[in-house]
Image (cartoon, rainbow, N blue to C red; front, side, top):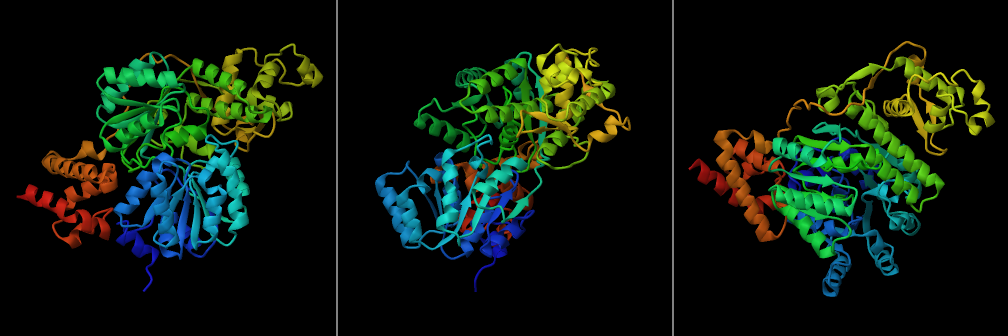
Length: 602
């Protein structure tokens, strides 16, 4: 009798129930239909194409942008007993020939390829001779020219619709605003397909943003107080800063490695392997690092420089806490970040439209830094999601900032947007409010409108902060199709009418940092009585991982070890009830881990 998705989930992957829309998505693909999936990091996107690949006739082709991570993804599947492999330029000709033989003989259920490989004529000719179960396009936001991770080779993936119209296509990403989603759908032929958009909220991540004073000392305090022996990622804008920060962290006694495009492929691979396979390693990186990282126990993400957009910030912070345990997203920012990013944008090869969009995205990122209300609410609002006013797990909720009554200033700012026709950017609006003697203002005849010159009580930077906060909190939207023009949202109406008030952030130096509640992972909450068993299980896992040349989490996640500590399984039937244990892992590792438990029970 043919297996069901539920049986595969339990017998192979070791989980009892699907989460969120996973079951619906799998049903859609099983029926041969295309779909677009937006699901937060750690939400279980991969199961949405892995299970249909195992159940449908033929081989599932997974297009993934990072060659370096295919090995770990395939290793994890092979540990589960899944017939999976990859095909990329890192393999020797003999290995590639062996993979091609396996796929022609029908010996594979999943094959991972890079978009560059898929676009080759030889690969397309091969695929035309095969029975293909589905095409999964992972990290689908890479197809967007306006996104934060654009890959030119992704643009060629439209050929899938042309050459394989009957094969279901599933495009997946964790990060895409409405414009990026529309572009993904258009370029991949998924406009008429069903779109599954899960909530973007990652409640286990604590968001904290503060102004730069002495960034290194601020980072050192953060690590010493909260994440002394944890794995994490520190993002910097420049390669030199990456190298210098990694060396400095090593001097401070941390296990830290650099990662950026200026290192050799061997060095990048070596440093990535250390991060994936050793405990407590910190990677200091440019944005070149992290996409597709499956390491579940990343406890913190640090930004020592401002990301270019909220999409980039969300994507990068989302690499923390994939296991659902508490994690921290901590960032410092300053005026120099803004200057550097603007200089990089102005020097880019992009056209004027591209540069306008990039500036608007940066303004939204700055808005998140400056708001006084819940950061999570503002972040989710950017992706079109509504949530409560108070999350209880960001610095603005836990440690409120000083504010001023900005109601009247906000009304002037909003009114100026309206009076000038809802089509101008921030700089022009500020000039109007300050009554500037500008040719452009006179050309538009705006020296005669009621908001001309009514904002002289604040200086330009203060008005800039007002506008950024209004954008971040949803009172104003930025039209990416114009020159960054602002227009009013429905939310602005009661504020303009005086039916509600608004408190705005006062920009002050960080004089005293109040204690923010520390995040606690499962490793920190193991009871003293269970500590010896917990460490024995982790030692066993590390030994097995070294023997099989895979990261420890490929053997078992921390959550599985915690279940073992809690339930103490001593029979095969009991061991199968542990989260993440299917038939293959029971057969491979069950007796070894149960013996550790028996020795402890002794």
